[in-house]
Image 1 (spheres, one colour):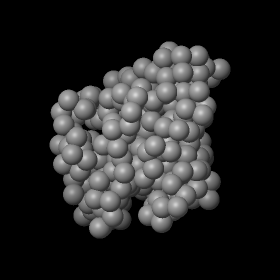
Image 2 (cartoon, rainbow, N blue to C red):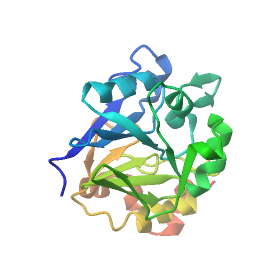
Image 3 (cartoon, helix red, strand yellow):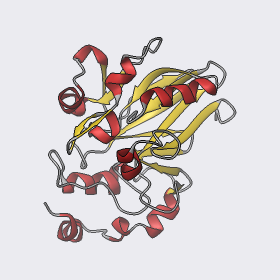
Length: 240
């Protein structure tokens, strides 16, 4: 394990950054920093709202952003237009002087990413489930978890699971938006994330619960989505 080298920060929009942004306070998104304390390299997960502030937080910790990981393409996670709001994101990250940060996305999310953010193919690094992205000596494993969007993905690093909008401490991502698929989300939760050990700590994409994180064991015991073990039961609650 690299816990002595691992740099990991969970940052809440409207509290830890973008404190003057009413949309950020309302949406309560989490962004994350993952890095290697020895090399000083860091990845920024789901940069949105006040991207320069996120970069500055890393710099104050002695870290430099060398890439970005994207859980999915919705504007509250990557920037763009949403319900009449204009949100900063990956496009602004790439425009910051001194920041060279390839944007790592799941292959099936590339079309949505380009449409929402205006990025080009050359800005994106496409991945499949099971790929790893290295930051210094720290490896981040990518888990493809479709359902909320076709290319939603989670990140596993040192007994931590960054789940985006696939799974919250209470509930899960909605499936009634374009590209959502309730059956796929069922399989993502019950099969694709089934191998995640109970002692792994879940870090969600939004703060929709009083706590900011919890073990997967505690989440499986308390989250109602795991009380629907049969697909027919799931469809009764989540059918589109």
